[in-house]
Amino acid sequence: MSERLIENHLKKRMTAAGGLCWKLTSPSTAGVPDRICVFPGGEVVFVELKAPGKTPNPMQERRIKALRACGATAGWLDSKGAVDKFVDARLA
Image (cartoon, rainbow, N blue to C red; front, side):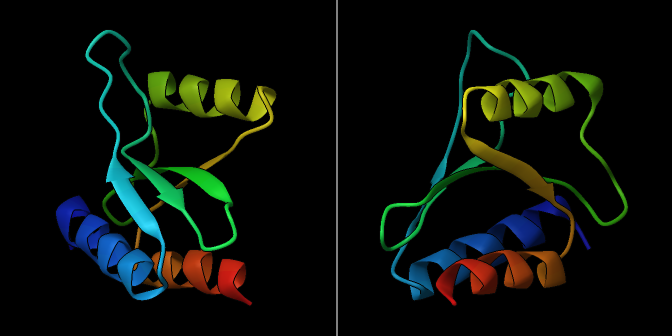
C-alpha cells in the first residue's frame, strides 16, 4: 500500500468526522508534516504519513520533535488501521 492511499484514507476519515485535513507545505522549511488535522472541538494535530513499515527521516523526526516541544500534537501514521485508530480515539 502506498503513502498516497493512506493519505487519501485520512482525508476521507477526517471529512466524514466533520473535521479538516489540510495539506501542509512549507517551501522554505524541509521536513514539515504532510497534513494538519483539525477535529470537531478544535484539537489540531500535525501528521506525517508514511508507507507501511516506513518511518520518518531524521529531518522529519526533528520537525515532529520541535512541534511537540512547542506544545503541539504531532506524529506519523503508516497504515489505514493506524489512521482509523488515530481518528476514532479523538472522536470518542
